[in-house]
Length: 433
Image (cartoon, rainbow, N blue to C red; front, side, top):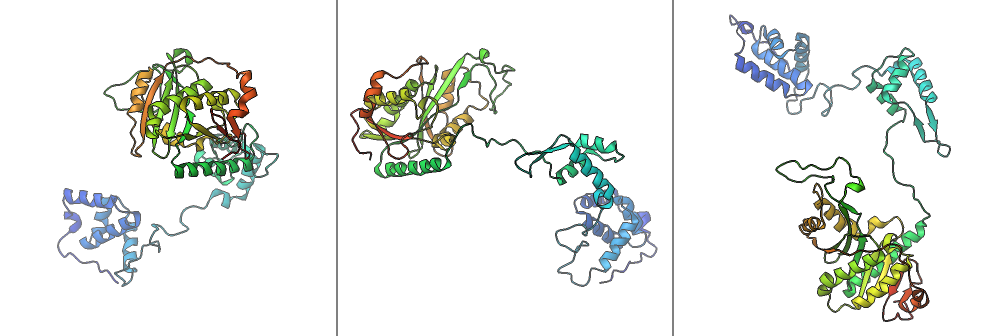
């Protein structure tokens, strides 16, 4: 296809040009286009004007006349395929042709690459156990300064690129190391073991409750992460020291994953096994008993540590008293060590409560209670809360009587018995079912 430059005769388009409004529209359209389309637009406008058009369009759009002449030649070489015009780059998704720009400095100067390697080697160290792991004590600015002392002048951005190409990046620290011994096979076996009674409880209609204690909250005019809608600023202390708090809130939760309902007990004292037992009893008597009035058994899912630790004799003694108080047999299953986040209550109940408390000044248990009762996410979760204002003492030990008669009320599961057992105040049967 050939483009002919029309002759304007006696009309001097460059002298007359367009009016100011049209020129502004040209610049607006020009700025909205990618680089190669800008050149083509300028070339088309210049061809429309004819004689003097290249100089005029170059002045209006702030371009080089050589660029416009180059694009006119590109238009002439586009060919006759008007339905599928080609970009100047030759590819539909690229603006410029491949291979443009300056070559990297390291490719053009082998001596520079050797100098960089010497600097990196002098400031790096390696892991004694993993040859693929290395550390370096230079940041991009420091690397640029080191190379500047050897006659290589680069900016910090180029230094950052060279560090990245050498494999030195800045990943965040990962919490992967465990503080105790965990048998991965035992852990996986326990997860499969928990799945069986959960499935059986769902089929038989047995209450299945996920139980845990949330992190303690300091009460007072203290900062909390998050934001809430307000007509003015709310001032809090600049530090969250314990002595600035008016008290502590111990939040204990009981969650029914089948019905998607939860019960929170807001304690004002300490987290002990007695508090956990009383919180479960309060939740059962005020909320879960009306939902299952004929229940004679319940499956309780706990973490492996804290006040409800799997090895705590005080907790097991309190479970016997809890079974007697509720009048039901309790089937207990503990999640393995370091897997508490797999407990359903963590991500289904506590996460919603934490979101509701975000940006709120929790200065009293009553205010925390009101905020919790307003929790109504789109998932359909329904939350009920009560305040348990009772003092619990630390250091309580199990009785000598419990050590002697515990086998009468607690039946250990033959599979992973440290984490699975049945508690029945009426006496356990001989066979674990």
